[in-house]
Length: 295
Image (cartoon, rainbow, N blue to C red; front, side):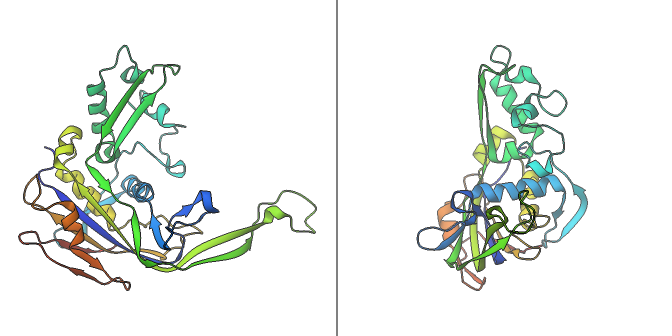
């Protein structure tokens, strides 16, 4: 059974001396808008959700505590360092008979688009959650078809509550392969950037109408809910040291029907987050959210 009720959610995130989402077109500086408000893109957040689903997690009980067995999900869009099937591209993963759907599923003469989309949604949780476009040119083997899956789970970019202060530090890198080691070449010098402190807020929603098309269920929603509370576990790096990124709170609104009692804009607008991470909720009549602490 697909999702039985509309869901809205909000994430309150804390950044301390870390680069939450570097911009490769700007020297990997933390993303920020022209007014200085920090940003973590929706693509960045979905990448972390996919990784946590793939790594393994436990569902949450009514009090927000993890319980039960460890669950690991099949993910279509895998990051390079977390590949579990040896596939070198999304096309290979989709068309492989063992880990994917087989080449015939994407052959213009043999494929049934609706059937292929249904099988892809059944196989990969991220496809039935966020959607996916399977587009292969006619020059590819067994291709010649484009299939678009529209997912029911949408996430906005996270923005900081106040403008962030970005600190840049010059560093030396152990990457140089030139010279005799007596002089530092230009390729050994680099820059490292960080956000000193920041509180970020991201909003999202789950649509029952779109869930009917992909088979996204209440159980799938619970899985997304579980990994949102531990978004940064297993995500540490030089740019994001362990403990520098934290989920402070997950606010979870479950409506009492598929259409929703209120618009997502009104629900999201009922939350006001302060610069210290505290927040105020203007509870809407008949819609009381669940407030869950981060992992």
